[in-house]
Image (cartoon, rainbow, N blue to C red):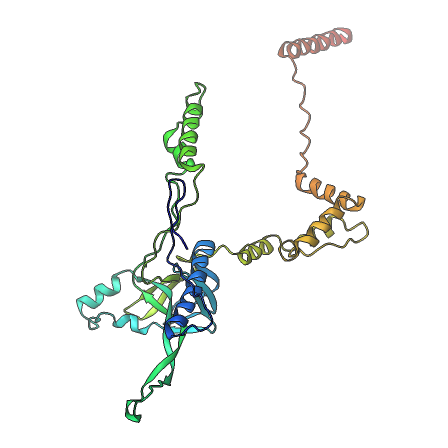
Length: 366
């Protein structure tokens, strides 16, 4: 294989090397180790670049205020190195050891009262990838005596470690264009006015942002810390009383944007849409409405149903009724008719006329 570089061609290689087996090759432990390393690092590379890092599913923390223990539920996560972290059973953690990280003052002393007056300490629940060798077996040593017989681990067991951290662990960040387009417009341009200066400012900001943003690829994530903790949540702990004061299950959690996550969000938001269609169409023959989950579990069937909606009159009428239902506004109450206002001169003239009529009637009687 040639790595020749010419004026119009540039070739180079990355760090990946896969084994090339051939007949008569002498196999050693190095060949098998490098075979595993190649496939493991390739999979971890795809995890980092395509999926990112964070919680894939589960791994909620459960605990009650006034208690001194929490439980991490089963689930899966990916760290920024691409390692899969799998928790198969609930993991219970006793928090009594938190009060022993530094010696507590004796009850009744000034230091003890000051400790009680302080706000509760904030702790973070982190999980990281962990592996350890296992399954020792005897090593075959040709020519060695029985006393020279040794054992070596034959497997590597993958697992995890859950730790309670008194600080925010370092987290890699996705690089973005900063400042964002919205920030540039709001910070640098005045509100709209008639002189047109605001529109000209917005045009310049969009042009400057486009020169930096358009035509570029998304940057690679930042480098990972050597030991990456994925945050599962946080809680406030009263060290003097050794109990949980407040549990924040979503504090600091990062989720991997998987297709399963979007399916969960979609079904949770629009589940029961078929009930709405049945309600607006209850005076007509029943229709075969699909389950809303078909949109992500069987999109072909969902599209076929959508096609039938536009070909069947009853379905078109149902959609029309739905549109009217959404656009329907409360009827405005008719305003009372305004009474016609009378001219004050006319009113005065009428009073004088009535008085004259009264005088005339008295004269006739007299």
